[in-house]
Length: 176
Length: 169
Image (cartoon, rainbow over the protein chains, first blue to last red):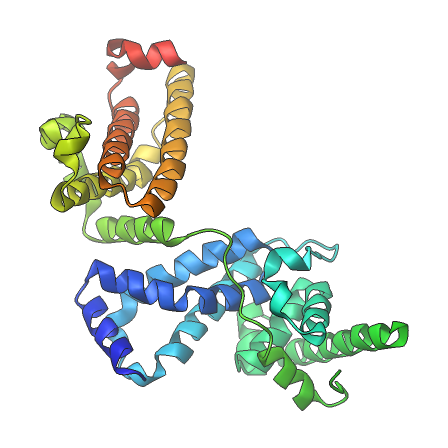
């Protein structure tokens, strides 16, 4: 961990407002990305962003190993997003938003854009499961517990999500 | 284009997806949310009752009168921000939110909340321009507006005594 982050964390633990803002500025994009990948709407992701930082500021003193700050904040964001997703009434229709609204697409490679689109096309729970498992490192047991379902539920959703993405990408290749 | 036949390739590509950005600055809202949480954790109800009886304008005194040049110092600006956050925490307290209001009170509340939303937008803009005087004036008006909201919810006679609110409905 860089020395400046260590210093900011130390100041934030003492309740310094500037340090809170600095942490926010450094990590808002990371937290938002985790939330937005899991949740179906920008508004929900923004709520999770705020909740995550409130939780972070509240529990900073509990963080024992400052080296693990980034995984820790990712974990808080993922859990908040998951809680929110569980509470949401998931719409049955697939929620596809304009890709351009979700990120700075101009800098993306073709592949990044297509994978992004394929991810967005997944059913909300499938998208959450693949992101939590493949990117955030959640176990099937953790995912199943969060959704109050069985491990088989998590495994089958993951398999379906991966299959859907492959099919989307292959469909694109066929048309190219 | 990468071959997504293997799970490892797909996982790798997912992790390489670009970072996303919010379309607006969420720090002011996050900070307010955090402050509200702090106030509530630190035992809002007894403290709130003290303020509710008196009205925060009495406690803030001249700082609430928008005289930009006098408000331009950092501590005074911070005082206004703290007062604003405190009043928001008061307004969020379950005791106050559960309190029934009349149709006239509701209309007045709606009007003032609308004004506060406009002020928030203006504050968002002014924070970019770094005009501390204007920022202080906006914060002062925000505190006054929130104070009115608290009074509207706690003092049944407040609306009758405040012609300016009645006129704007």
